[in-house]
Image (cartoon, one colour):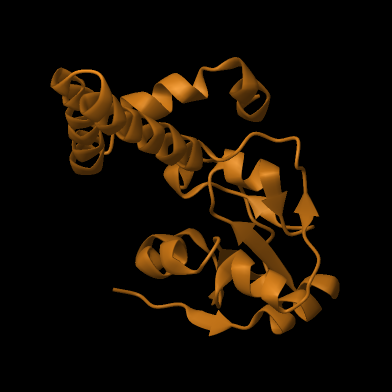
Length: 176
């Protein structure tokens, strides 16, 4: 498995400013829409192989995600995508912000789909438990159904709740 050399956020910021590198944000489009580093190119990991993006030759490529976990787990895929030297930004967007570096934020953009799924699933499970305790024990089935759905999503990689939430009116702008 290939590894990518880590660069700290301050080094990335300096090199981004002097245009000696290309910063590639591998988070999903909804995450990028809500918050990103100015000058970063959005190239979601889920579309890496199918995207026909040409990165400028002769420049180093630095990949970043939110925490560095996705980039670290996908070093081989990312290294294969870059023509020349490739790096990963240590600690991702979170470390960038901790270093006091600026980000572009759009608070009007919807929350990321994964966070919406977590909130919705949590509310449904909690509702099922409360209703089972206060109204009728059969309501525990709601919690079981959501738990089974989350298990299926984790095993298969397909989440019906995420698909449903993505189709909601408040998320249509982010998909465009």
